[in-house]
Length: 486
Ligand SMILES: [Zn+2]
Image (cartoon, rainbow, N blue to C red):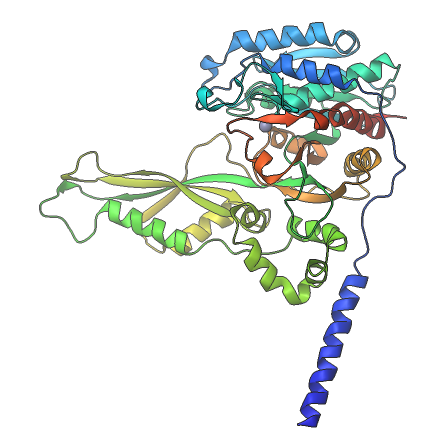
């Protein structure tokens, strides 16, 4: 009995030592940079964003439905509001109403950088539900309210304020800086496709790209006392798949044991019962390697010892849709169709499953897996045409890569209280169009959001805190200085 107790004691001690070593061996990865401050005009940033919100640049599913008047208005407003930018940079209108600005660098031998944002906004479901009208740009209760306040006119105005300010103080970039503002990011993405095509045609090779996509999370990640800026180093791929069954059809009074509709339903049920495998590799493992040393106990010990706690952590992450999306390819059945009448057997029945591909999967492997899980030779699978279909993006470099160092350095210099970490962007961004043109692509803007604030993106009462607005021009100034300065 004593021996067993002793053996247990030794084992326990070994475990405590191992866990302690795990913690000790994961020192902080936070970049140490000298603090910086930028002279920004917060009042101008706020007023200009309010003005930009007043143009109803609502995206449309079809190119002919684009609100040209609103876009032309916004573009003309930019010319008036940012005269130095329009004087010093070359502006080209591409893909209808998208803008590509070129700010020539002093040294043309250096590969350029590209900053992106978009001018269109998603529609408003019900204007009456809004506390303040969505297109009035109302400043109230410490916030600026309106569609586009977060997604993504704040990015357009923030970048333009930064460039205008830098020109005013006599700054010239060493390497060329491009600015790309899409007019249909939320739907067709043709504007940024056209901008990418133009750069490709000119043989431009970019060092790195910064687009929207991730934010400064505030109280969202468990175990962290500080806000965390997640810099998207990759984004998930996209694949919609049509699941189809065919039959002879006929009258439903004398049916066969199963119908095409029934087989499609069974296929859908099998898929939902067997989600794609989850794992902590790739961007998720990088994220936790960066954040674990900053966590409170006991989570610090847990995340520093994934050799032991991996199954527990994974099961926790897969409980919530937002973290589940970080660790696996997700599948959502979105469309379903059978016979057109209640007493007619369907000749064809089909469903569409929308997959968002984790970087460990690709379109071909995902399709093969669907076939395996559905396990029914009478079902055919084919890609459902969508302009968004695409492979997961390559994973951009973190520390030591010029783009990551510029972005992380800008954040840490301006906000030493904010942690940085590489992350995986869950949605799709326009930056995908530039994958073949750039060494690295990052997705981040300095929006600091709590969980309820994040919910207002694309929702009711979209707004940005006034105290957050100063960070936008300051951040983009620092990014340009670090990324394209001397
Ligand atoms: Zn957006």
